Amino acid sequence: MYRRALSWLLRQTLRLDVYINKVYPTDWNPLYYTGGLTNLFLLVLVVSGILLLFYYVASLDGAFASVAYLTERVPYGGLFRGIHRYAADAFIVAVLLHLFRNWFTDRYLFSRDGPWISGMFLLILGGFIGVNGYQLVWDQRAQAITAIFVSMLYAIPLAGPPLAQLFLGGVGINDAMLPRILFLHVGLASFLYVLLWWHYVRVRHPKIWPPATWVLATLGGIILLAAVIPVTSGTPAQPGLKVFSYPLDVFFLLPFWLTNWLPAGIVFAALAALGVLGYVIPYVSRESEPAMGVRHSGVAQVIDGNCTGCELCYYDCPYDAIVMVPSPHAGLTKAAANRKLLAAVMDSRCVECGICIGACPFEALELPKFLEADIKQHVAQVVTA
Amino acid sequence: MGKRSAYLLAVLALSGSSLVLAALILFGESADNYNLGGAALGAILIAYGLIGLFLRKLGITGPRGAERS
Image (cartoon, rainbow over all chains, first blue to last red; front, side, top):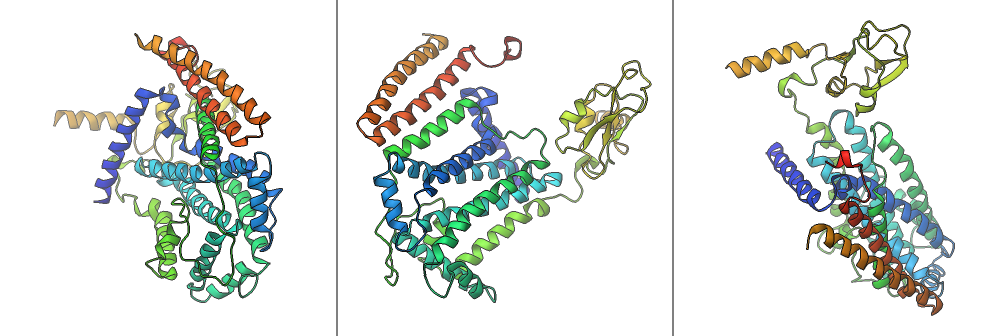
């Protein structure tokens, strides 16, 4: 059932690609750059965030007034606030598109579990940082979501109350809270770049930046939105007053909206379960006996005499499993006689996919338990039958 | 009207609009109307993005001829 649903989603994803490729040049298809667009939005968030930080006062008395001053009095302050807010929404949309695309196209299995796991951390932390951003404004919405978040923390068995006290800096809402939230907002945002390093480290040729036309168009869209629909604060927070309604941002505050019907603890447990499900997807989706014996083919072996040191396999390997080393001696074939480099396979990284064999025009690589001769024989048998 | 002519016209129209938008940015700045200036800045960036796309569609930018085919 799961595999059938994923196959259907894969077909729809590829159909969408075909349609978009008719409108845009193939190498400008925005769906190929969802990761790069996320990077762009993150950079916009960091730059606009630094500018906002200059004016922000992290205290219960000063936070709302400082945001209001920034929005209404500082030249382009309101625009920068809007850019920060809409770039955050765009960041979540791009991350979700990136996640679904890689899920539907099976780009999360085997050696790609690292990027998937780091990507899940990026999504969860990105969402949490966004919620912190709403708390920093310290209007009545901030007050309401802080109260709900603290209820969620208290619902965690054993660790909940200490975590809530750590978050608040005391038993209730007090002046130590906003500096902590600001630290979480800025500190975790910086930590996202560490996670990005982990996300990219094992990906060969990652597309970390979209084409210029998409940089201009998305940046323009965010600035236009910030100017046309300016971001405003609500009523200042009044600790002690119960807040019953507040404007909802569907990209960050949906779980808080659910607490209208469900206890905060249940919503938190559901979020945690969803997170765990996200982390285990690469491992529960693996088929135990993949078709045609792929993944049981043995680590790719370099046929020393044939390797010319051309580096094609090195560039094509998506798992960074091939390195080029100085050749200790000449190859045996005419093409390999004057080589300077020799390909070497790192066993721990090879997933036995055979891409390097397709990349090599000199028959210098082979999967030991999945030889070309065997494949030809198998194909011949199938055709004859 | 062929596709090339349509793209060319679009590039010309967007270039003209960009001039107007540039003037609006200056006006917004001089009148302290930051939202107007910001909106014009956003719109001009979108126009530049579209110009880039149409130039690519026209074959003026992008991969070499041999790669295009």
